[in-house]
Length: 103
Image (cartoon, rainbow, N blue to C red; front, side, top):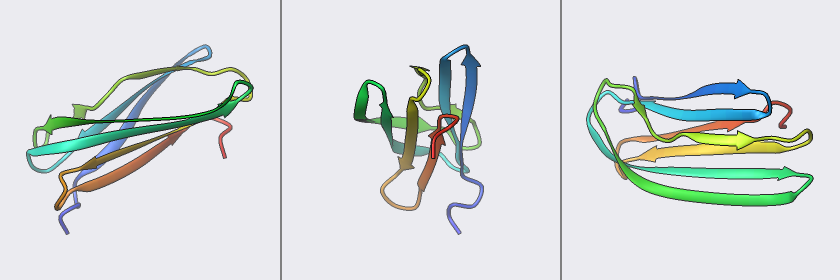
């Protein structure tokens, strides 16, 4: 199975109402990958969706930080972030982060 050993994780720090989220990919082989970040939020200010894609070179067996997002959440805000890493062939990883209190 090609995906064995490939991992996508989140480093998360919280400082008050601010969350710092860093998706980290660890792959078993070098990969010229596309990384897609999709964020959905809803709360008192309404709903928003944003998405961005970028090419990233990920070195095999070396944890690679894909992005760094800083989110300021108010009470009642809900945020989910979906990260997709793919090389268009063998590698396809997806992982979701949800703010505390998200369903």
